[in-house]
Length: 392
Image (cartoon, rainbow, N blue to C red; front, side):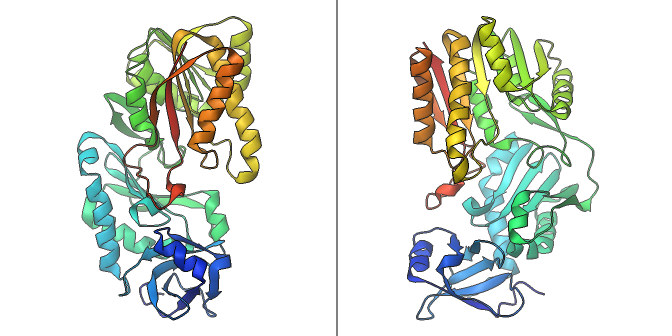
């Protein structure tokens, strides 16, 4: 089926119309008044109750997010529309592509290409398509990316649970070219070996890139990096600190972190396998002290129902960190849980400081790197909170 051969139409409710006109790209199942009866159409015309065309959207029959607005133009989109939108997204990253070898080129809804992710690692691209509508565009995307960027290979990393909500299978593998076992990227002068096929997300946490560069300006002395993964914060800290202790639960991630340390000839980093909650308690009990601590945990709240437990988790690790920081110590603390707002996260930090009997100065309030922009009309595109604090 040609996804651009658009024959089906979807009517949305007045609430859905207001949502689209406000600039939000999602329309939920409850706001659909009329939907196609036949086989699922990946792209559909979107109309209001008077059949005025609101635009065209990616349609997902099995998802609560039934429509993702692809364009608000009156004319139907075609392959050239997709090519133009990808080109515009890539063009926005021109400066980053010159200075960085690891960069996000397409950030889904924030680039008006809903449920489509494209990351570049050196000469290789990683593509993700999270919705059934985006999946129908995958072959076009591969050809556009080949023509536009001339990569050495394109990898599909669609091994994410979100695809199950769309009735799609999880899969990963080469879409074009040969994909090496690992690729080296440079970030602020630090080299990282990235496992494209098996690493977290698309291989590396690109969204924290600018935060790592900012944080390392403040640190010195003895540092602790919690939830270290493959050692990104730890190795940036190592360039400024006397020593770094890095804690991670995944043995595979630790092995790659050690390789990254050897690649950068850093001998002042100790990588230790362990549960961060347990390690922080033990360090507190034993009276250990640090001059800088980084907390970069995975998302504690992946849905609204998990918020209460997440608040408790964030408070505990920040409280423990503040207890083992020396006066004037630096705390770099993050949350990538969208369901914990920045204001709520800031409140958690305040509660932790109160219980730790410490004062906290805010040096920087940060978010995800600029190659992960925030669409102002879609708060869902802003998920990462990063605070650089001085603990008195």
